[in-house]
Amino acid sequence: MFQASLNVPLVFDKGKNYDFTVGVDYTSKNPKQPSGLAPQLGYVRYIVDNRYKDFLVSANLQAGYLFDFNKGMDNQFRVSPHLYVEYQGLFHCRVGYDYAMPLQKGYPFVSIGIGGLMMFRHLSFM
Image (cartoon, rainbow, N blue to C red):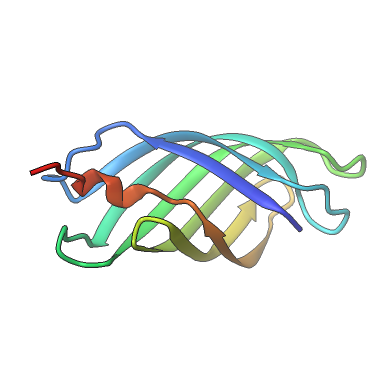
């Protein structure tokens, strides 16, 4: 299964240990679980966030409306609490749980990928 997300922080202030995001999540078609396109809102709480470290750790909550690609499943609200770890602003890992409300079912997930770029909040040229 392929999954891609784009979430843009709204606060983007390195002095605050939280942020709100708006974005979209795409999951390739999978007949056994909800998958499709989901516009979403999120909350990010930074746990390890220091400009002198090579990594960032945050607890996140993403919620959105999933337009499901499966013919046997209806569109639905989806909530995804997860732990997010980013290394050097380029590699990231998400471990969490996706819960689909109308189905009253969920499944754990592990997502490893390239991107992230949340560490850019500490970017400085001087």
